[in-house]
Image 1: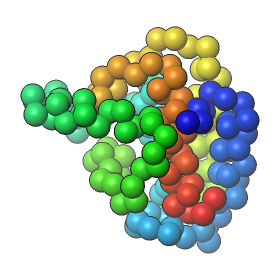
Image 2 (image 1 turned 90 degrees about the horizontal axis):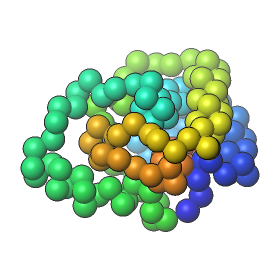
Image 3 (image 1 turned 45 degrees about the vertical axis):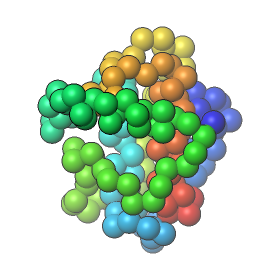
Length: 152
């Protein structure tokens, strides 16, 4: 599995982001290209401790068990399925200016990549702790999923 901490992978993601335009349309899902770029910023911010989930409350026993079972799917080699449900806080419903959001996304990707030597990360509000390696793989996997959504 690729990791956003790997320099070649990081450069690949930046190149793919650069190919997105206002005319890019999704192969699945409802987001526009601008909304997708905004959506993809949020998990990066969460990982770096810049964002908290407003809608998350401490999960009960059954949800904790479910999250524990699904946690490895966040960073394994298997691509994510199309049309997965989105965390309520990460849903972008208003239209976004693609050039602005692409720039913000590229900046956050660069900032995350610069954390390649960080060893302590904030806990994920639903899945708990991730290792440095898991964070890098998970962020790559999320970006890859949505860039594939827009054929980038």
